Length: 121
Length: 90
Image 1 (cartoon, rainbow over the protein chains, first blue to last red):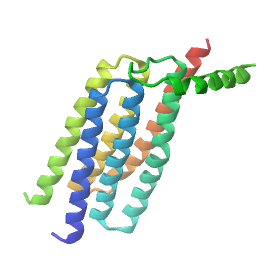
Image 2 (image 1 turned 60 degrees about the vertical axis):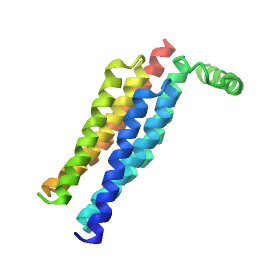
Image 3 (image 1 turned 90 degrees about the vertical axis):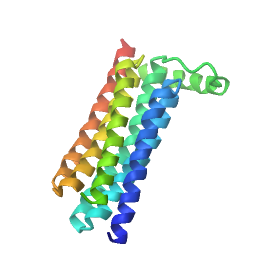
C-alpha cells in the first residue's frame, strides 16, 4: 500500500465513525433543535472526510472535479437546509427542551413576529 | 481479500449501522421536522455509501449518481420546509 492509500483509508474510517456519531446523536439527544445541530455538523464533517478519502484513493483529475462538485453542493446546502428547517420548526411551535434557556430568545421572538407580520401585510 | 478491501467493507458496515439508527428516528420521530432532518441524514449516508461502493467496484460513474442525489435531496428538504411554512399560514 502506498502512503496515499493509507491516508485515504484513515480519512474514510474516521468519516464513517463521524457519521455513526451523528446517527447516535440523532437518537439520543432530547430536542429537535439540538438534534438538528448535531446531525448537520457531524454528518457534514463525516461526508467531507469520506469524499476526500475517495478523491485521494482514485487520484485522477476527473474524479477530483466530480468530488469537488459534490463537496460544493453538500457544504453549501447542508447548513442552509438546516437553517430553513429549524426556522420552519420554530414557526410551527415545535417544543423546546425544558432546560433550554428561553430568556435570550424571547426578544428575538418578538422581532421574528414583527418581521413576519410586516411580510404578511 | 487484502486489508484495503476489508477496511472498506468495515466502514460500509458502520455506515449501514448508522442508517439503521437514523431509520429508528425516522419512524419514531415525534414531529415532521424530525423526519425531515432524518431524511436529509439518510441521503448523506447514501452518498457516502455510493462513494465507498465506487471505490470497491472501481466504477467511477457511481460518483455521478451521488452528485445527482445530493442535488435532489436539497430540493426535497426545501420543499418540505416550505410545506410546513405554508401549513402555518392557513
